[in-house]
Image 1: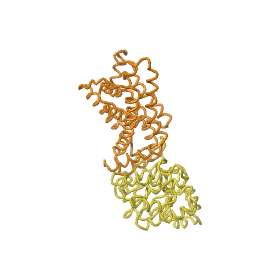
Image 2: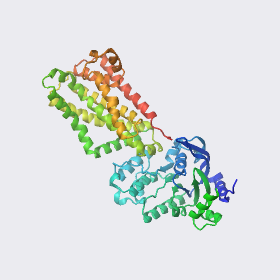
Image 3: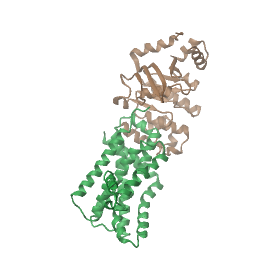
Image 4: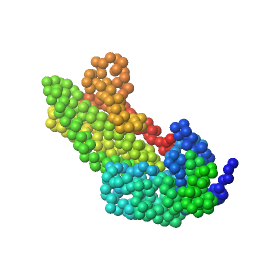
Length: 251
Length: 244
């Protein structure tokens, strides 16, 4: 057994009392392949936890299991004290997939109006979320005519409608200009400051630096976790990217 | 289940349909145009046109709703919106009934337009009440919708979904008695026809057209309604909250 970084234990400690998501021995098999061979993880409340790892490392599968839309082969996933995917969680957890999940033949506002009614959220939320994602000028444009980044923001807006306690975001800032990316990250921090928990996946290293907690994934396993500072310190690296490489080599 | 989510879905689907002007035009214009063509083709065989004219008003909604629904539901599945809805506080039936309401409205509109042209301009005659033909057209629209929802689960592309029309709908039309009366068919085919839902819709339409409003008519209508409910229930089982 090689040296497990101390930082792993730090997250586990937080897990005991404040964990919003507790994953224990999660196994997922997809297409005959064990995509997740037994992952354990705790996501603390009120912070931004970043899932960092290359494409194919199992980030999306892990997020899908946490939201409760993934068929799992074994292990336990508990969200807000309930089994993942149980009915009461459907109005407390929001999930944004990598591909925008909105109706391309409706306008941004029409999409939001529909999902708002499904979520039974107050009508005032529509304008607020349109502003949050910066789509004010495109609110009455049909989604199919928007750019890729604008579509992702429309999809993100749906997740913000009902003020969820846990936001699970799969690469929400892909293809966005740096200014807007900065603004969205400020929004994520503001939401976390209000006590909401955010689990966000990314493969952009500068975004990793903006997370409160990081979970590094590689080939379906968690290589390390901890604060960006702790991970850098642990490896003596200057950036999270270098820390990631060092930890990946060590595992 | 909640009326809120059902109605919201019906309005959303209706909005999507309203935005697609070309589809709407095709849905409303093609049936009366084909009826007109058929009346011209059968110009010298008026008896045949009289026999199938009224039942044909109910055939178009079956075909059109089957196609529209199977593709719309396939888009929900492949576009990620179905997964999003299934992770929200929404019952599967809310989604299905929402689709049902929106398409019933479209089927009613289509039935009214086709019936108006058929009875008003083409001289199609129905001995029974003409409104009953329209009501049965709505029933076949719902049947087409329910079957479309069900088969969309087995299609992974729009190419496949479109091919299900000749695979599932055309045999029902051929065997129902539209082209050749069922009692003139080989016994085996007659038996198969008895197991297909459209056969009962066709019989009901033919009975109304002949003003043959007996108890058998209600049995036919009941069978069609039962098939709609069954197809919707089976369709609901294909909507999964968890997928691989």
